[in-house]
Length: 122
Image 1 (cartoon, helix red, strand yellow):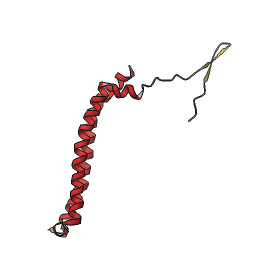
Image 2: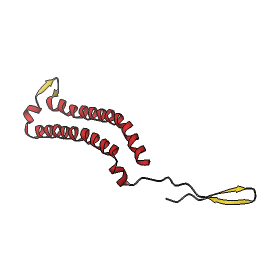
Image 3: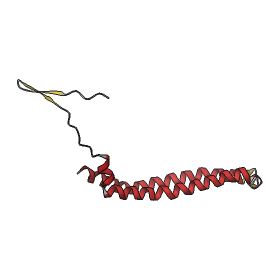
Image 4: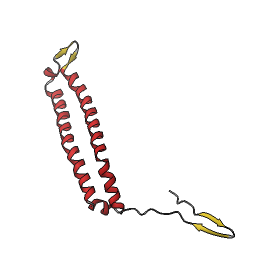
């Protein structure tokens, strides 16, 4: 990445070089130590950990049933649709529901994110 060249400003006969202004960025340590960041992290992990573990257990149950309960998974529910197909479709549905719930959760955290960013910039 190249640095922007300094712009020349002319005022009458005088010419001076204007340097681009560098925004002061907070350090990673400053961000991690802020109480707002800790609260944001706690609430995010509080959502991700239980939902992630529940989904992993649900996925593993489906995989184990597919491998060891073939007769049960092959039971016809209606027409040519069996229990395995329904559970497989439920995997997709649960993924979509988890994604939607995560989006709602993160939108609720946006004010806290903004507050944390503002606190660190001060």
